[in-house]
Length: 158
Image 1 (cartoon, helix red, strand yellow):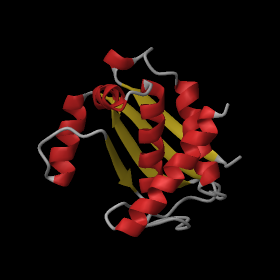
Image 2 (cartoon, one colour):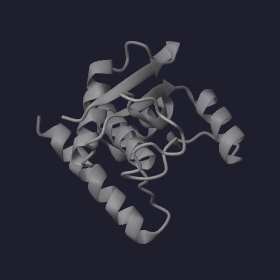
Image 3 (cartoon, one colour):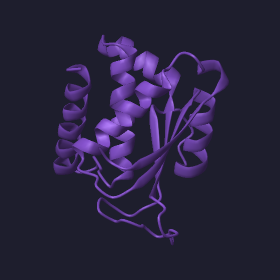
């Protein structure tokens, strides 16, 4: 089991709709499958469309909502400390994943699977982005989708 710190914030309208322990399990499963061995810290936010749209507009220049945003603080997979000096005995800050609860609901309906499956996919997707995975090129997309599938398979087998 990886050594990690996870900070979870769920915006008021969504409190009680998502199980924080389950979210922690999805993050942990993603880290294990991705082979993370060094201590890391991640922040996860379950937010509304307005929050996600504002962040998307401010930081990506895209004035629309999206399902998941990932703001990485380290450079890439295996980049233990990224661009920041980390105090001794502190985990490397991977970054923050922000998920739109409403987009997850919508996409779950469109894909005809459970909201939990969609949330797990988005959490895994965001965490993988923090670790340097990307889907801009076909090879990267294939690798990222394979990792996401492994995470979903592991969670669904439980």
